[in-house]
Structure formats: structure tokens, C-alpha cells
Image (cartoon, rainbow, N blue to C red):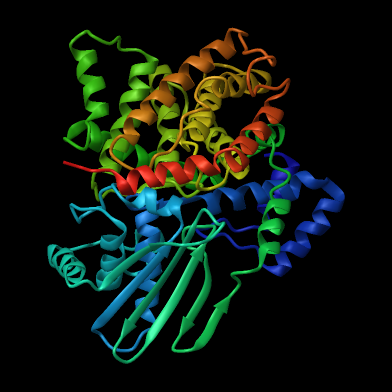
Length: 467
């Protein structure tokens, strides 16, 4: 273990929801004067992994709605709920409209809210609906039939915004979650304000400043030096996401994208190679997750599909190459951190498909397993952004498995090209002379260039005529 590692690991405790106590910060500051910023950054990387890699059941947007509703219900008096009002941002609504809620055999913002009120346990976070029973589902559907659930699009500039007001004959409670799927920024019960940080924009600026050390170079350095005992969260990601991938390949979920790929290999239509193996496992996991599987996944940056596609393509390639456990864990760590780095630029929810970010991370992890160094990884990023950048998000649904399979195929292809020294030119499209500049361009495209696209996508989705 390096001296940097020893100094860092001696003063931290890595656990779920990692928090550094004031005393620990003081020690770290003292250490950093002697060892430089890398000691603090080591700890901050662990904090970021613990914060952004979260176990989730089902799609995170309906789970966030259920979580908000469950928390509001916790603060009202009386058992009989008379009304539930949900106001959510367009991005949240489009991701909750069509994706199947685990254990419910149904979808929709109203169903997620009703289930949250009836059976949700807010202490479980994004596993809020774990343990649903058929009786819970029937009660939720009855509540919807009775007209007790009202859903509206919130007038807000925030892409992730959920407001739920639960009322009984005796009382009411209002909860607002914003910017992160379980981040409560406002809580009011019966006229008493309990939490109010809704307008603290400086908090977002502080978070961005705190994560400003994130870069391809700093991620690479961390992946080389991190002690494997500090990466339990990565091992958990590999375990959970592989389990649901195998579940999707073994049973008929959604569009059966993964099963179809694997069956096509058996028939001799597809070759049994790196690309098809990675595509099948990754798509199989998305098939299961988006179509009601009750198995949890390890999400990345608020998305289960991003967690899947940042992890499983690397796992599949690692299995094919028979790499060591250490190589695989470091590669998956690299992949997830690159995905997080890109997501900090494009936002948690965007009109751009998040699989393009996590797929780029996967390409970096695959490049690493193929023997590539930092420069090859930067080339893989450039190649990915020259290919799948334009893929937009039209809501969470079974079809997301197709998008994950596409990004996975491109991830392997981009990695192989990078290993061969083949890079897209900086004269092409949004590609710049450095991968960091290209990521900045992607962030600009996502935050500035897709606002109208978001509006149009939601308008199409809510007004389509389904026969």
C-alpha cells in the first residue's frame, strides 16, 4: 500500500452513506499539508462512489415519486388518505410514465404515488417499495379509481423535481424532493415547516466546487492506487447487476433483447464474441429491470440503467478475457467514475440518453482490460462521443434495453479502436483536441441545447393516441 493510501485509510470509515466527521476532516487537512491534495482526493473519490452508487429497486423516477409520497404520508395524522397531489418536472414524468413498477405489473406516476402512500417505507430510500403484496397493488389501483390521485407537470427549471401533498381529514403534509432522487429540500406538516432548503442554489454550486477535482487524469490516478478493500461498493455493483443480468437472460422480460442476442448466437446468426457477450448480459439486465423484476440493481448517478451499463459490459469482457478479480474491480471502478464525471456535466436527468455516458465509462473500463493506458482511455472517450452522443431520452421503458445494447456494442468497438491507436479527429462535430474538452461540449449540448427537445418529447408522449 502506498503512503498516500495508508494516510487516507487510517482516518476514514467507508460505509453506506459515507460521512466524514469534523474531526476526520481536521486530520485530513493536516495530512494534506504534508502529502498534498491526493490524500484528500482519495477520500473524496470514496465519498463520490458511496454517494452516486446506490442500490435501487426498479426505475429510479417512479421510486423517487413513491419515496416522496411515503415520506409525506409519514407526517399526516389519520390512516384514511383523502387526496394525493403530485407535481413533478417533465423529465421525471416522462421517466415514470411507461416503465413497469416492480411487483405491481403496472406503471405510471399515479400508481407510484399511490403505492408509496399505501405500502412505501421511506427509510429504504430507492428500495421504498420492496416487499409489495398483491393486496397493496389492489388498494393502490382502487385509490386511483376513486380519483384520489392528481398529477400535474410542475412549473420549475429543475429537471429533477417532485412535490407531493398528502391529505387526510385531520391533516396534511407536503414534501419536495429535488436535484437528487431522495434529497428532501422541503417538508411541511400541518402548517409547520420542518425542512426548507428549496431555494439554496448555493448548495449546488458548493457540490460542483467540491467535485471540481474530478477529471480523467485524477480518476486514472485513483484507480491505479486505490486499495481494493475500499471498493466494497464496486464488488456489490458487480454482484447485484450480474444477478439481474442473468435473470433477464433466463426469463421472458420486456422485449427480451438480451435473450434474443444470446439465442441468435446459438443459432449462428451472431458470432460468440466480446461484443455479443457484453450486449446480451447488459441488455438482459435492462430487460428485467424495466419490466418488473424485483431484483435490485446498483445505480449510477441516479439511474439503474446507467449502473448496469457502466458495470456489465466490463464484467462480460473481463469474463471473456479471464482477467483477475483485481483487474476487474479496478476496471469497473474506472468505468463508473468516468460515467459519474460525464454525468456531472450533463445532469442527472437530461434529454440525452444517460447510457451514452455510462457506455463511455464502460468503453474506458474495457480499454483498461485490453491493456490500454490513460491515453488509450482518452481516445476511447473521443470515439464514443463521436458515435452515440445524439441518442436522446424519450422516457424509461422496456425499449431502453435496446439503447443499452447499442451503447455496449459501441463501447467495445471504441475500445478496440483506441487500443489500435485509431481516434476520431478533432475536426469532427463536437470532438475537441482533448477528451476533457469534448466532455465539456457534451455538457453544453445537454444543458443548453436540448430544452426544446425535452418539451417536445413530453408533449408527444402525453398526447399520443394509443389504439
